[in-house]
Length: 209
Length: 394
Image 1: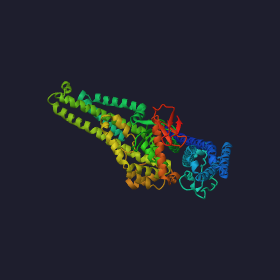
Image 2: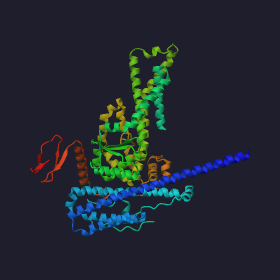
Image 3: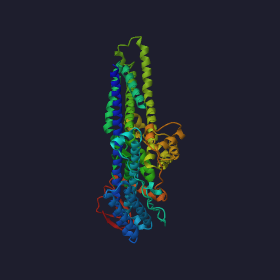
Image 4: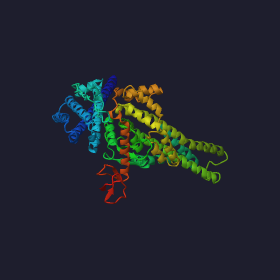
């Protein structure tokens, strides 16, 4: 009789452990998929930016052809970022290249200030709206990605899910971090303030691993 | 829990109706449930489109108003919503916006052209973030069902009181004469039931309305918190709310004008009250004060700031423990200067859209660049520019 009771107790304990394992495992999978999904969101927006830039540069060229250095810097940064992307660079590597592109773009936008004709161009205005919004979307998708990563990483480190994570091979994810001070906000695409003599762009520091 | 209270109220009315008209409480309960059930089905599949068509909203695409569409998409990304909600514009100078739909994958946002023209990008982001917050927190379904419940109560109470009134006129309640309990002893009991029933029928819609409003209010604060989390910029929503506040007289008038329709037609009321940025909402001053005193942009910061102002809790604990505290971002560059020019552009953009929706065409004069608007009935092959006299091909 005591053997039966002991057996039942053991069975119940085992069942509880299995339930905890399943719940935590599923939770981890859900969060990991959320991180993956958030990353693909960033990817979509970054690609959208690659597509916008040639158009933008063409339009600006028509009005401000002698700003060659700035325009080339943007094109180079874009090509660089795209090649890192297509080479399958890691999160940190890509964050760095994209940070470069963001600051080149914001330099261009400051230069553009000096060309009132360009700013009156309908085509340029709609490009500007697209670019502003794409920059916002990049930073919002990055924000969502980082939140997802934080939640996922917390789960992989907290008890008891950390045990399940290490058994089942859930690894920490990397943050998409661009660490310049002004970088958490949308880039300063200022069209109303008078042209500033010093572009606010500082090259982004190496991303946190 | 408040929903349960409302459900109980509905059943109580059904009970009284059944007891009085059919001598059977069960019949009344069944009627109440059938009415409610039918309305729920309608709401589930048609609710959002009924509400949207009632308010005269029109669906727009990315080309119609790029700024609005982009901002909605930005907030969709920030909130991690899976599907882009449908975007609607209401041609109305009042300042208002609402979200509706049956679940996050079948959601719609609507904004009035007045509000659209009034807000800068940061403020628009705040407002859209608030509405997406309703979508994401699943308030839209809660509100849809709560308003359906309210609608059922109002309908039942209305018909019951009408029938009661007319049968009373017809002389001592014709229906009651056939009842079995109609002896001399049953007279007082009947009277008590009658009085209770009358009181309940008069009060029920009012009580239901109060309950409905208080559900809505809590969710508003929560949506404000969500908006702050998504935008990382509570000031945007705060300053948008401030604009609504200074303009509130206009909206009050609009509401008064439509108020008579409310009483007889609960569907219409539902449309106005679902997630209306005003009617069912907590005082704007409180909401602004809470948003402005936030130390960061996370749920935890909102909760702390809410406690300072209201001395109670608002954010569910589950959100507080999982969400880390978050830093704020700064204003986007657009909001800084040139507000006047920006406002002109915004107003023009919005009015262009409204003209276009009414099938007006816009062409630009080749000579002087003046924009000419052509009514849908215009069928000549060319038009003369009133500004410079140049004849443009249409």
